[in-house]
Image (cartoon, rainbow, N blue to C red):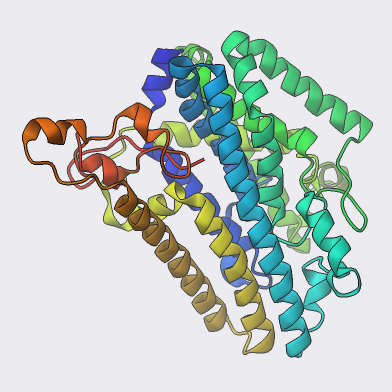
Amino acid sequence: MKAEIAARDGDLRLCLLLGIAAWFLFLDHVPHNAVGLLTLRNFGFSGATDLFVFVGGYTAAILYGKMMLERGLIVTATRIFKRLWQLYAAYVVLFVIYIDLIGYVARKSAAPEIIGEFNVTGIVDHTIRTLIYGLLLQAKPLNLDVLQVFIVLMAFFPFVLFGMMRGPNLTLAGSIGLYVVARHLDWNLSAYPDGRWYFNPFCWQLLFVLGTWLALSGARTMRAIQALQNLSILRVAALLYLLFALTVTLAGKFPQLAAMIPEPLLDTFLPNDKENIAPYRVLHFLALAFLVSHLVPRDWRGFQWPALQPLMKCGEEWLPVFCAGVFLSFAGHLVLITGPDSLAMQVLVSIAGIASMTSVAYYVSWSRRQDQKPTPARNPDEAATLVPTAHTQYEHGSTGWPDRSSQTSSRQPSCSTDLPATMPRI
């Protein structure tokens, strides 16, 4: 397992994919935005949330799996719960400011309907009660549900990681069993003031655990699949399924295309079951991941392209980028409903939002580097002792994992000349 983790350590694809998920989530959260038609959810059954949860589980498995092998279960569990507290604190601050901002804008502007659109109707009549339920993760303001479900998944991650270290296949089987039972018995968590969680954690844990399993012990299975002589058949099958999902998804948007498809077939896949993440949705994402992992290898030279650096930086600093995206999506929605709702304005709002998220990512990364800069040494021997080791890096930053900029200052080459080892801050 050490070899498997080492083989995946510093995979730049994780930064790239988390950056894509962050940008797509922002675009999806701006209603009536034509640019949002370019996101993943418009071309198949799965979307940016699926990508975020899966890559989150994969990345957390590498980071904390390495820590568990080196430092044991107790230390790893404390680091996971420390990170969990940071996620919860970010959610609380985001929740309080977010709903207060929505209420203030609704009262001062000519758009009071946004209180209902953003699921914060209780903030007007039952402010204290709404805040209390929000602290318990039972309120469901629009666009915060992704962070809510991720907090729950991280809360149970120490148990998942322990199971993966002892019996990975058995742990995966337990995750699949929980997914099946939750769908069959309709398990979900209740929300305030009514309804249920938009992303059912009993079902969405499957994608998170699948990512963990593939990171820690699924390599042998993947190598066995790649060794098959009919591997090309699997790729063709995955591609055909993606094309089928694209056709069905477009049929849900265009009645002319829907008329050409048998109605029982459309009723099976539409509407897309996002709450309980339907099996065909999981299969669609796995087929997509299977093809992407083939088309974009670990040593892909495109990671050096300057155009991709902002996207990858957003993936490294996904938490502040996500929080900024929540506010920016609200601001973008407000601009579009109170100003000229033209295509040019929609494009401008999208570009401005992504640029602002990228600026936040670079600022947070720069600020963290200032805190981690060692004191200038007097001699080479003293300087060598000031270079952060892997163990000391665990104690710094949001997860403690050094970013690309901090590694280039020690023993890793810069991104412009080679591929440095880096991990997102899960």
